[in-house]
Length: 424
Picture 1 (spheres, rainbow, N blue to C red):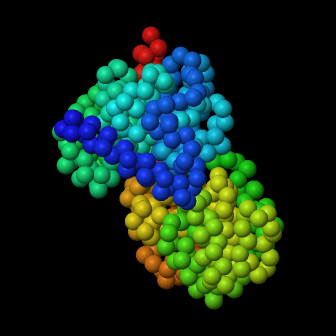
Picture 2 (picture 1 turned 180 degrees about the vertical axis):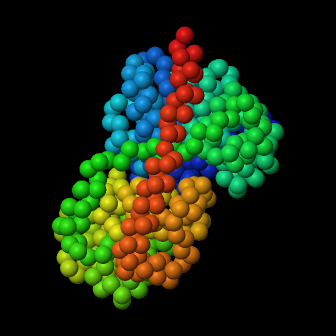
Picture 3 (picture 1 turned 45 degrees about the horizontal axis):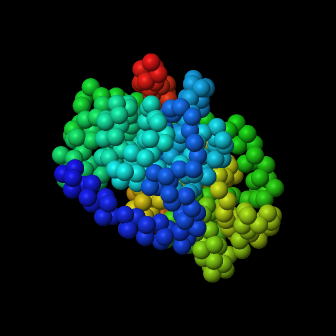
Protein backbone atom coordinates (compact mmCIF):
# COMPACT_ATOMS: atom_id res chain seq x y z
CA UNK A 1 0.00 0.00 0.00
CA UNK A 2 2.84 2.41 0.87
CA UNK A 3 4.59 1.77 -2.45
CA UNK A 4 1.34 2.41 -4.33
CA UNK A 5 0.84 5.65 -2.38
CA UNK A 6 4.38 6.81 -3.15
CA UNK A 7 3.94 6.13 -6.87
CA UNK A 8 0.55 7.87 -6.91
CA UNK A 9 1.87 11.00 -5.21
CA UNK A 10 4.61 11.41 -7.83
CA UNK A 11 2.16 10.78 -10.68
CA UNK A 12 -0.04 13.53 -9.19
CA UNK A 13 2.73 16.16 -9.45
CA UNK A 14 1.48 17.60 -12.79
CA UNK A 15 -2.02 17.77 -11.30
CA UNK A 16 -0.68 19.70 -8.30
CA UNK A 17 1.03 22.20 -10.59
CA UNK A 18 -2.15 22.60 -12.66
CA UNK A 19 -4.08 23.17 -9.43
CA UNK A 20 -1.69 25.96 -8.42
CA UNK A 21 -2.06 27.54 -11.86
CA UNK A 22 -5.85 27.35 -11.65
CA UNK A 23 -5.88 28.92 -8.18
CA UNK A 24 -3.49 31.62 -9.38
CA UNK A 25 -6.03 32.80 -11.95
CA UNK A 26 -8.03 34.22 -9.04
CA UNK A 27 -5.11 34.88 -6.70
CA UNK A 28 -1.68 35.49 -8.34
CA UNK A 29 0.05 34.79 -5.02
CA UNK A 30 -0.37 31.08 -5.76
CA UNK A 31 2.33 31.52 -8.44
CA UNK A 32 4.88 32.63 -5.88
CA UNK A 33 7.19 30.48 -3.73
CA UNK A 34 6.18 27.29 -5.56
CA UNK A 35 9.60 25.78 -4.80
CA UNK A 36 8.71 25.69 -1.10
CA UNK A 37 5.85 23.31 -1.86
CA UNK A 38 8.47 20.88 -3.18
CA UNK A 39 10.91 21.29 -0.29
CA UNK A 40 13.28 23.98 -1.60
CA UNK A 41 13.91 27.05 0.56
CA UNK A 42 15.92 30.27 0.45
CA UNK A 43 15.84 31.08 4.15
CA UNK A 44 18.37 29.55 6.53
CA UNK A 45 17.53 28.19 9.99
CA UNK A 46 20.18 28.02 12.68
CA UNK A 47 19.84 24.94 14.85
CA UNK A 48 16.63 23.00 15.38
CA UNK A 49 13.07 24.29 15.39
CA UNK A 50 9.54 23.68 16.60
CA UNK A 51 7.30 23.27 13.56
CA UNK A 52 3.63 24.26 13.71
CA UNK A 53 1.39 23.61 10.71
CA UNK A 54 -1.91 25.48 10.25
CA UNK A 55 -3.70 25.04 6.93
CA UNK A 56 -5.13 28.51 6.41
CA UNK A 57 -6.49 31.62 8.13
CA UNK A 58 -8.81 29.90 10.61
CA UNK A 59 -6.19 27.44 11.81
CA UNK A 60 -3.52 30.17 12.06
CA UNK A 61 -5.80 32.26 14.24
CA UNK A 62 -6.62 29.19 16.35
CA UNK A 63 -2.89 28.47 16.75
CA UNK A 64 -2.04 32.02 17.85
CA UNK A 65 -2.36 31.44 21.64
CA UNK A 66 -0.22 28.31 21.34
CA UNK A 67 2.44 30.09 19.30
CA UNK A 68 2.64 32.94 21.80
CA UNK A 69 2.80 30.50 24.72
CA UNK A 70 5.65 28.60 23.07
CA UNK A 71 7.52 31.83 22.33
CA UNK A 72 7.22 32.83 25.99
CA UNK A 73 8.20 29.39 27.30
CA UNK A 74 11.00 28.69 24.83
CA UNK A 75 12.41 32.04 23.68
CA UNK A 76 15.57 30.39 22.35
CA UNK A 77 13.67 28.08 20.00
CA UNK A 78 13.03 28.92 16.34
CA UNK A 79 9.36 28.51 15.46
CA UNK A 80 8.56 27.48 11.90
CA UNK A 81 4.95 27.95 10.77
CA UNK A 82 3.62 26.41 7.58
CA UNK A 83 0.36 27.02 5.76
CA UNK A 84 -1.22 25.82 2.54
CA UNK A 85 -2.70 29.10 1.33
CA UNK A 86 -1.45 32.65 0.64
CA UNK A 87 -4.16 34.03 2.94
CA UNK A 88 -2.82 31.80 5.69
CA UNK A 89 0.68 33.07 4.94
CA UNK A 90 -0.51 36.67 5.22
CA UNK A 91 -2.23 35.90 8.51
CA UNK A 92 1.05 34.51 9.89
CA UNK A 93 2.83 37.72 8.91
CA UNK A 94 0.07 39.90 10.35
CA UNK A 95 0.04 38.10 13.69
CA UNK A 96 3.70 37.25 14.23
CA UNK A 97 5.80 39.32 11.81
CA UNK A 98 9.41 38.13 11.79
CA UNK A 99 9.15 36.35 15.14
CA UNK A 100 8.42 33.08 13.31
CA UNK A 101 9.75 31.61 10.08
CA UNK A 102 6.98 31.03 7.54
CA UNK A 103 7.00 28.51 4.69
CA UNK A 104 4.41 26.77 2.60
CA UNK A 105 4.06 23.18 3.71
CA UNK A 106 5.62 20.69 1.27
CA UNK A 107 3.37 18.41 -0.71
CA UNK A 108 3.36 14.87 0.66
CA UNK A 109 6.01 13.68 -1.79
CA UNK A 110 8.66 11.62 -0.04
CA UNK A 111 11.60 13.64 -1.44
CA UNK A 112 9.93 17.02 -0.73
CA UNK A 113 9.16 15.97 2.83
CA UNK A 114 12.75 14.83 3.40
CA UNK A 115 14.10 18.14 2.08
CA UNK A 116 11.77 20.05 4.38
CA UNK A 117 12.89 18.07 7.43
CA UNK A 118 16.55 18.56 6.49
CA UNK A 119 15.93 22.33 6.24
CA UNK A 120 13.69 22.92 9.27
CA UNK A 121 15.35 20.32 11.53
CA UNK A 122 12.24 20.10 13.73
CA UNK A 123 12.55 18.61 17.20
CA UNK A 124 8.75 18.68 17.56
CA UNK A 125 5.95 18.84 14.97
CA UNK A 126 2.51 20.21 15.86
CA UNK A 127 -0.35 20.03 13.37
CA UNK A 128 -3.44 22.11 14.17
CA UNK A 129 -6.65 20.16 13.68
CA UNK A 130 -6.07 17.21 11.35
CA UNK A 131 -4.42 16.39 8.08
CA UNK A 132 -3.26 12.80 7.72
CA UNK A 133 -0.16 12.74 5.52
CA UNK A 134 1.54 9.34 5.38
CA UNK A 135 4.98 10.50 4.18
CA UNK A 136 5.19 13.41 6.63
CA UNK A 137 4.10 11.21 9.54
CA UNK A 138 6.47 8.43 8.49
CA UNK A 139 9.38 10.87 8.34
CA UNK A 140 8.66 11.87 11.93
CA UNK A 141 8.82 8.20 12.87
CA UNK A 142 12.04 7.54 10.98
CA UNK A 143 13.73 10.55 12.62
CA UNK A 144 12.24 9.89 16.05
CA UNK A 145 10.57 13.32 16.09
CA UNK A 146 7.47 13.59 18.32
CA UNK A 147 4.32 14.59 16.45
CA UNK A 148 1.27 16.17 18.10
CA UNK A 149 -2.11 16.51 16.41
CA UNK A 150 -3.47 19.50 18.34
CA UNK A 151 -7.19 20.15 18.59
CA UNK A 152 -7.50 17.05 16.42
CA UNK A 153 -10.73 16.10 14.74
CA UNK A 154 -11.94 13.70 12.08
CA UNK A 155 -15.21 14.42 10.30
CA UNK A 156 -17.59 11.52 9.57
CA UNK A 157 -16.92 11.91 5.84
CA UNK A 158 -13.16 11.86 6.35
CA UNK A 159 -13.11 8.82 8.59
CA UNK A 160 -15.08 6.85 6.01
CA UNK A 161 -12.56 7.80 3.32
CA UNK A 162 -9.62 6.94 5.57
CA UNK A 163 -11.10 3.53 6.38
CA UNK A 164 -10.86 2.58 2.73
CA UNK A 165 -7.09 2.95 3.16
CA UNK A 166 -7.02 1.74 6.74
CA UNK A 167 -3.85 -0.34 6.33
CA UNK A 168 -1.93 2.73 5.17
CA UNK A 169 -3.27 5.02 7.87
CA UNK A 170 -2.91 2.44 10.62
CA UNK A 171 0.81 2.47 9.90
CA UNK A 172 0.75 6.27 9.67
CA UNK A 173 -0.90 6.59 13.09
CA UNK A 174 1.49 4.15 14.73
CA UNK A 175 4.57 6.41 14.62
CA UNK A 176 4.48 7.66 18.20
CA UNK A 177 1.84 10.29 17.51
CA UNK A 178 0.19 12.18 20.37
CA UNK A 179 -3.43 12.96 19.50
CA UNK A 180 -5.01 15.83 21.44
CA UNK A 181 -8.60 15.22 20.37
CA UNK A 182 -11.32 17.85 20.40
CA UNK A 183 -14.07 15.46 21.55
CA UNK A 184 -14.51 11.88 22.70
CA UNK A 185 -16.15 11.16 19.36
CA UNK A 186 -13.02 12.34 17.55
CA UNK A 187 -10.92 10.15 19.84
CA UNK A 188 -13.04 7.13 19.01
CA UNK A 189 -12.68 7.82 15.30
CA UNK A 190 -8.90 7.93 15.64
CA UNK A 191 -9.00 4.63 17.54
CA UNK A 192 -11.01 3.11 14.69
CA UNK A 193 -8.25 4.18 12.29
CA UNK A 194 -5.59 2.36 14.31
CA UNK A 195 -4.28 5.02 16.70
CA UNK A 196 -3.09 3.60 20.02
CA UNK A 197 -5.63 4.40 22.78
CA UNK A 198 -2.86 5.42 25.20
CA UNK A 199 -1.80 8.19 22.84
CA UNK A 200 -5.24 9.77 22.54
CA UNK A 201 -6.02 12.58 24.98
CA UNK A 202 -9.22 14.62 25.24
CA UNK A 203 -8.11 18.26 25.39
CA UNK A 204 -10.93 20.16 23.70
CA UNK A 205 -10.92 22.72 20.92
CA UNK A 206 -8.16 25.33 20.98
CA UNK A 207 -10.39 27.72 19.04
CA UNK A 208 -12.10 28.57 22.34
CA UNK A 209 -8.81 29.92 23.69
CA UNK A 210 -8.32 32.83 21.33
CA UNK A 211 -7.76 36.19 22.99
CA UNK A 212 -10.23 38.83 21.90
CA UNK A 213 -8.54 42.18 21.39
CA UNK A 214 -9.97 44.32 24.21
CA UNK A 215 -10.08 47.34 21.88
CA UNK A 216 -12.27 45.60 19.29
CA UNK A 217 -15.71 46.34 20.85
CA UNK A 218 -14.93 50.04 21.28
CA UNK A 219 -13.51 50.30 17.76
CA UNK A 220 -16.61 48.59 16.41
CA UNK A 221 -18.92 50.98 18.24
CA UNK A 222 -16.97 53.98 16.96
CA UNK A 223 -17.07 52.72 13.38
CA UNK A 224 -20.78 52.02 13.75
CA UNK A 225 -21.40 55.55 15.00
CA UNK A 226 -19.36 57.09 12.18
CA UNK A 227 -20.69 54.94 9.33
CA UNK A 228 -24.18 53.80 10.31
CA UNK A 229 -25.40 55.93 13.20
CA UNK A 230 -28.45 54.30 14.76
CA UNK A 231 -29.19 52.08 11.75
CA UNK A 232 -29.65 48.32 12.27
CA UNK A 233 -26.68 46.39 10.83
CA UNK A 234 -26.22 42.71 10.10
CA UNK A 235 -23.19 40.91 8.74
CA UNK A 236 -22.84 38.04 6.26
CA UNK A 237 -19.31 36.84 7.02
CA UNK A 238 -16.91 34.43 5.30
CA UNK A 239 -19.32 33.91 2.43
CA UNK A 240 -18.67 31.60 -0.51
CA UNK A 241 -20.06 31.44 -4.04
CA UNK A 242 -23.89 31.46 -4.14
CA UNK A 243 -24.11 32.71 -0.54
CA UNK A 244 -23.67 36.36 -1.51
CA UNK A 245 -26.70 36.13 -3.80
CA UNK A 246 -28.69 34.59 -0.95
CA UNK A 247 -27.56 37.29 1.50
CA UNK A 248 -28.36 40.11 -0.92
CA UNK A 249 -31.80 38.68 -1.65
CA UNK A 250 -32.37 38.33 2.09
CA UNK A 251 -31.28 41.94 2.60
CA UNK A 252 -33.79 43.11 0.00
CA UNK A 253 -36.50 41.43 2.10
CA UNK A 254 -35.10 42.91 5.33
CA UNK A 255 -35.22 46.40 3.81
CA UNK A 256 -38.97 46.08 3.34
CA UNK A 257 -39.36 45.81 7.13
CA UNK A 258 -36.38 47.96 8.16
CA UNK A 259 -35.69 50.45 5.35
CA UNK A 260 -32.65 51.88 7.18
CA UNK A 261 -30.94 48.50 7.59
CA UNK A 262 -27.42 47.96 6.29
CA UNK A 263 -25.72 44.70 5.30
CA UNK A 264 -22.01 44.27 5.91
CA UNK A 265 -20.80 41.48 3.61
CA UNK A 266 -17.32 39.92 3.91
CA UNK A 267 -16.39 37.28 1.29
CA UNK A 268 -14.15 34.48 2.50
CA UNK A 269 -11.57 34.70 -0.30
CA UNK A 270 -9.95 37.95 -1.45
CA UNK A 271 -9.89 36.87 -5.09
CA UNK A 272 -13.70 37.13 -5.04
CA UNK A 273 -13.89 40.72 -3.77
CA UNK A 274 -14.34 42.26 -7.22
CA UNK A 275 -16.83 39.58 -8.25
CA UNK A 276 -18.98 40.31 -5.21
CA UNK A 277 -18.73 44.06 -5.80
CA UNK A 278 -20.06 43.51 -9.32
CA UNK A 279 -22.82 41.29 -7.97
CA UNK A 280 -23.93 44.00 -5.54
CA UNK A 281 -23.89 46.57 -8.34
CA UNK A 282 -26.18 44.40 -10.47
CA UNK A 283 -28.77 44.30 -7.68
CA UNK A 284 -29.06 48.07 -7.77
CA UNK A 285 -28.17 48.37 -4.10
CA UNK A 286 -25.87 51.23 -3.13
CA UNK A 287 -22.52 49.95 -1.92
CA UNK A 288 -19.41 51.32 -0.22
CA UNK A 289 -16.21 49.27 -0.29
CA UNK A 290 -13.95 49.24 2.76
CA UNK A 291 -10.89 49.53 0.51
CA UNK A 292 -12.21 52.78 -1.00
CA UNK A 293 -11.94 54.68 2.28
CA UNK A 294 -15.27 56.32 1.52
CA UNK A 295 -17.85 57.00 4.18
CA UNK A 296 -21.27 55.35 4.17
CA UNK A 297 -24.20 57.62 3.55
CA UNK A 298 -27.78 57.34 4.65
CA UNK A 299 -28.55 55.69 1.31
CA UNK A 300 -25.82 53.02 1.57
CA UNK A 301 -27.45 49.59 1.54
CA UNK A 302 -24.36 47.37 1.60
CA UNK A 303 -20.85 47.77 3.00
CA UNK A 304 -18.36 45.41 1.34
CA UNK A 305 -15.52 44.28 3.60
CA UNK A 306 -12.89 43.80 0.91
CA UNK A 307 -9.84 43.87 3.16
CA UNK A 308 -7.97 41.13 5.02
CA UNK A 309 -7.63 40.64 8.76
CA UNK A 310 -10.61 42.75 9.85
CA UNK A 311 -13.36 40.18 10.25
CA UNK A 312 -13.46 40.33 14.07
CA UNK A 313 -13.65 44.12 13.86
CA UNK A 314 -16.54 43.88 11.38
CA UNK A 315 -18.40 41.53 13.73
CA UNK A 316 -18.10 44.22 16.42
CA UNK A 317 -19.99 46.63 14.14
CA UNK A 318 -23.05 44.40 13.69
CA UNK A 319 -26.22 43.55 15.61
CA UNK A 320 -26.69 40.09 14.05
CA UNK A 321 -24.17 37.73 12.41
CA UNK A 322 -24.65 35.16 9.68
CA UNK A 323 -21.53 32.97 9.27
CA UNK A 324 -21.01 31.62 5.78
CA UNK A 325 -19.66 28.46 4.27
CA UNK A 326 -22.75 26.90 5.80
CA UNK A 327 -25.52 27.37 3.24
CA UNK A 328 -23.26 25.56 0.79
CA UNK A 329 -21.52 22.26 1.67
CA UNK A 330 -18.20 23.85 2.64
CA UNK A 331 -18.61 22.93 6.30
CA UNK A 332 -19.04 26.34 7.90
CA UNK A 333 -16.59 28.77 9.48
CA UNK A 334 -15.79 30.03 12.97
CA UNK A 335 -18.95 30.74 14.96
CA UNK A 336 -17.02 31.60 18.11
CA UNK A 337 -15.85 35.09 17.17
CA UNK A 338 -19.36 36.57 16.86
CA UNK A 339 -20.50 34.56 19.90
CA UNK A 340 -17.59 35.90 21.99
CA UNK A 341 -18.64 39.43 21.00
CA UNK A 342 -22.18 38.78 22.22
CA UNK A 343 -23.90 38.59 18.82
CA UNK A 344 -26.82 36.29 18.03
CA UNK A 345 -25.50 33.91 15.39
CA UNK A 346 -27.20 32.53 12.27
CA UNK A 347 -25.70 29.62 10.35
CA UNK A 348 -26.68 27.35 7.52
CA UNK A 349 -27.06 23.59 8.02
CA UNK A 350 -23.57 22.66 6.75
CA UNK A 351 -21.43 23.02 9.89
CA UNK A 352 -19.46 19.76 9.79
CA UNK A 353 -16.08 21.55 10.05
CA UNK A 354 -16.88 22.31 13.69
CA UNK A 355 -20.09 20.44 14.39
CA UNK A 356 -19.47 20.29 18.15
CA UNK A 357 -19.10 24.08 18.45
CA UNK A 358 -22.19 24.66 16.32
CA UNK A 359 -24.22 22.22 18.43
CA UNK A 360 -23.09 23.82 21.69
CA UNK A 361 -24.18 27.24 20.49
CA UNK A 362 -27.47 25.91 19.10
CA UNK A 363 -28.26 23.98 22.28
CA UNK A 364 -27.50 27.00 24.46
CA UNK A 365 -29.70 29.26 22.37
CA UNK A 366 -27.04 31.49 20.85
CA UNK A 367 -27.03 30.12 17.29
CA UNK A 368 -29.92 29.33 14.99
CA UNK A 369 -29.94 27.36 11.75
CA UNK A 370 -31.37 28.86 8.57
CA UNK A 371 -31.74 26.78 5.42
CA UNK A 372 -32.37 29.38 2.71
CA UNK A 373 -32.65 33.07 1.99
CA UNK A 374 -36.24 33.35 3.16
CA UNK A 375 -35.38 31.90 6.56
CA UNK A 376 -32.29 34.10 6.78
CA UNK A 377 -34.32 37.24 6.12
CA UNK A 378 -37.04 36.20 8.57
CA UNK A 379 -34.56 35.58 11.40
CA UNK A 380 -32.76 38.88 10.80
CA UNK A 381 -36.08 40.75 10.84
CA UNK A 382 -37.12 39.00 14.05
CA UNK A 383 -33.86 39.86 15.78
CA UNK A 384 -33.85 43.47 14.59
CA UNK A 385 -37.29 43.80 16.12
CA UNK A 386 -36.48 42.26 19.51
CA UNK A 387 -33.56 43.81 21.39
CA UNK A 388 -34.14 41.66 24.48
CA UNK A 389 -33.88 38.48 22.41
CA UNK A 390 -30.66 39.71 20.82
CA UNK A 391 -29.24 40.35 24.28
CA UNK A 392 -30.39 36.96 25.62
CA UNK A 393 -28.79 35.09 22.76
CA UNK A 394 -25.66 37.20 23.00
CA UNK A 395 -25.26 36.31 26.69
CA UNK A 396 -25.73 32.63 25.85
CA UNK A 397 -22.96 32.75 23.26
CA UNK A 398 -20.52 34.46 25.62
CA UNK A 399 -21.32 31.82 28.25
CA UNK A 400 -20.49 28.96 25.87
CA UNK A 401 -17.25 30.69 24.91
CA UNK A 402 -16.10 31.24 28.48
CA UNK A 403 -17.14 27.80 29.76
CA UNK A 404 -15.11 25.89 27.17
CA UNK A 405 -11.75 27.61 27.46
CA UNK A 406 -8.70 25.82 28.85
CA UNK A 407 -7.59 23.67 25.91
CA UNK A 408 -4.30 25.57 25.61
CA UNK A 409 -3.15 24.64 29.12
CA UNK A 410 -4.12 20.99 28.64
CA UNK A 411 -2.24 20.97 25.35
CA UNK A 412 0.89 22.54 26.85
CA UNK A 413 0.96 19.79 29.49
CA UNK A 414 1.33 17.29 26.64
CA UNK A 415 3.83 19.36 24.67
CA UNK A 416 6.22 20.48 27.42
CA UNK A 417 7.61 17.00 28.22
CA UNK A 418 8.16 16.32 24.50
CA UNK A 419 10.22 19.48 24.09
CA UNK A 420 12.18 18.75 27.26
CA UNK A 421 12.95 15.24 26.01
CA UNK A 422 14.00 16.48 22.58
CA UNK A 423 16.31 19.11 24.11
CA UNK A 424 18.34 16.63 26.15
